[in-house]
Length: 243
Length: 243
DNA sequence: CCTTGACTATTACGTTAGGTAATAGTTTAT
DNA sequence: ATAAACTATTACCTAACGTAATAGTCAAGG
Image (cartoon, rainbow over all chains, first blue to last red; front, side):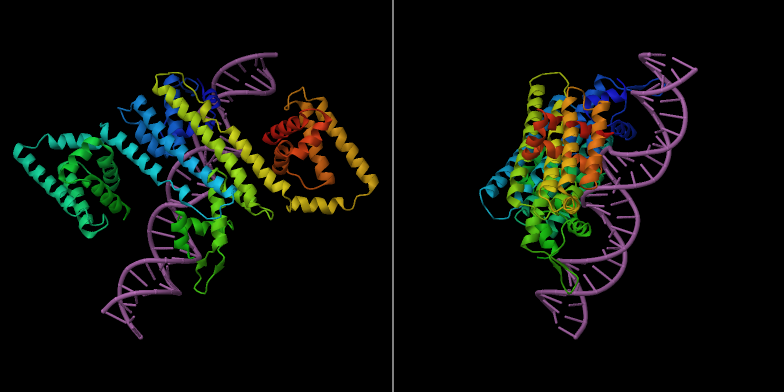
């Protein structure tokens, strides 16, 4: 398939497909002898995923990060797209209900129905899950290399330090995630990861934060140090990366 | 209310409010002696309308045109917002249904559920209706001035010419709206409006096209020349302004 | 009264995701 | 061979803010 055919089938512009090629989001299957872009069924399959993720207001950069993952799983993706679209649909229903009230004569000004944060949070969690959990990322590779050199004694030290940090988080979780203590622990945790696992900038740390509550294994493991500790760590990290 | 308070209540940025002031979309009620923007209840009311229209993917320019209308009617607006939001919600339901199929194992690639044209059409019709029908626009004023000088004889000539054009449209409506004949009639119609009523560029003509089918009085009047003539004229004009 | 932190303003530059148009090579049907 | 439709690349522009620097204002506490 040539470019106009694809553009027409999907109802997007040729320019859009050029742009997607340019940013390596969707490259054509091949370039023919005339220099024309040739797309195939796999191209369309990927393009449909892009359309779903655009529908969910992911940026192209985010979409690229998600789709570039070697272990991207279409069936798992459909489940997640649905979950997010249902949230989006339900939000629209709330706005429709608000309008029904106004049509009936209600006068009270309200803005909370426009709130998008629940969907944004779920998106961030999905993105983090895809990028982190399904592995094959740079960080995962780096971590593998680094940890493969550790001795048993070394591991004992790491686990001890890990426990201390998590215990500390658990001990102060009645305080605010924004508290000085919590923020210092976040810094400590970040340094821990950098030291023993992989380079962890704030973007990575943010992804991890979401993962601690969205991945059942992480959550279960962390909450052994105290109920709701994973949530508290997540909140503390999110506050940290915002400031 | 000062700017941060508004921004926080509505969950938008201070920068956004600055920008809305800059483009005269939402000016503060007053500027105090320190140079601070002060907003009031009316500001919030207008801001809520802006949020609804943004939710419906209207550009800020479009939103401004709609809200600047002297006869903007809040209750009528709520009805229209609801109608459009229901369309938008229903489109999401279609996408969710598509995903259900894929989750169940269906393999057939489909892009038609992403189609936005119905909603876009309804938006254009709403915008046209607000701008044209509720009057007090520049064109309306110009038309009033121009037509107030016409004699009875003059009106007879205008009505005759009007009838001829509409009859012609009705006569060729088995042909394509893109046909040479139809396109020539569009040009003739445009010239007619320019000559006897007001300056009519392609943007205005496009708005009129939508109005001919969305406004019951126009539609009824035009269809006296032949069933579905209003729709045919609309289609012909839309083709014309696209080329 | 002074200080400090939170609030406010304006200015300026940058970003994302294309839209638009010019220029030129390629393909296809007549 | 010709013309129209297809394709490509290049270049500039847009909308709607986000980010940051700089500086004035306000309010509470010392």
